[in-house]
Length: 423
Image 1 (cartoon, rainbow, N blue to C red):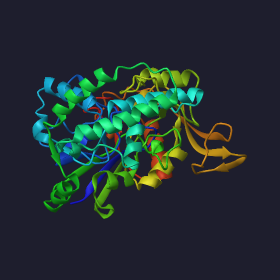
Image 2 (image 1 turned 60 degrees about the horizontal axis):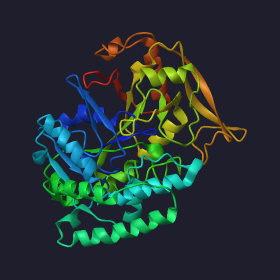
Image 3 (image 1 turned 135 degrees about the vertical axis):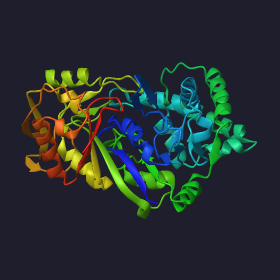
Image 4 (image 1 turned 90 degrees about the horizontal axis):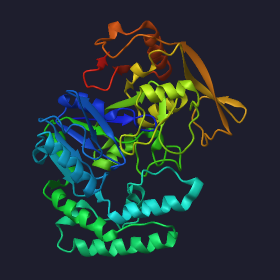
């Protein structure tokens, strides 16, 4: 049985959580394969809003198994908070939630290291969410990390203390004014670990291999977006994991030849949180309108998102890197009311027109070239099928399909799971 992937194609915040929730009924297993609590997957249904950070977005479906894969980094404190909120909604997560033993743990000192490192950069800061993600992945690649499976060992606290002491020395090296009470942070951490150990830990790569042999269907859920990939994103303003399709193989232990569909999710416009280049960013009333109507604030940090026109050059790049087979366009409803819309179709890069994403997309090197489209004024939020969508929106969609040579199978017209149009 093949594995399908679901990925963000921009700088994150594309609406992956909603689409996973919509698609979950078609799958036996939903598996998160990278990132940590810097992710914010928002789901809206039955008049309620839910925000997940680490737990897969299929958790609200009783018949789906939800797996946190080896490529994920877990903060037990954040994880416990998520579980507590699920309990208030009557979700029996102990039956449907599995954790890979090979997933790494975010320690309190990882978060402090993150804050100290960012503070030391001054104006050159990268816009970290300060969740300890980067330092945790650094310990992973440096072969110093603590994994979920270590919690089953009698001496795991000795390993913890050794690593935490090392972190404190590193924090002192940064020489920044960082106020913290490690004893209080650790008390909360160890209490949360007790909750984490009440869940089922598994050898996830073997579990998924057996599930595939048993003809179980798997949807791999990505976090962040392709332009934040540590290798292929707008480095150094990126996350610390592989957010692209290749990350699903290393983050779950599934073979590349078992991957079938690659669902790529993008907004009808573009947003970005934090620092970093953004060729189509708007600083006018259009950008302000997108932010206001689209409620563009980070689900994890609450930070306002920068907004701009759709960047087709960057979108094409993300489709190529991921091998996208189907596209899903989110927030088409936010663009209702714009008389004119623009899509960036190429760049003027160092005086020459190009159609690919170059090594450096800083503003001093690059200027976007736009194609204009007529907008639509209709309220899309109550529309239920593709035949009712405005002709001007269909022109917008058809242009993208022709340029990308990939079908747009879903158009989202609102945050609720019911506000989803299949084409």
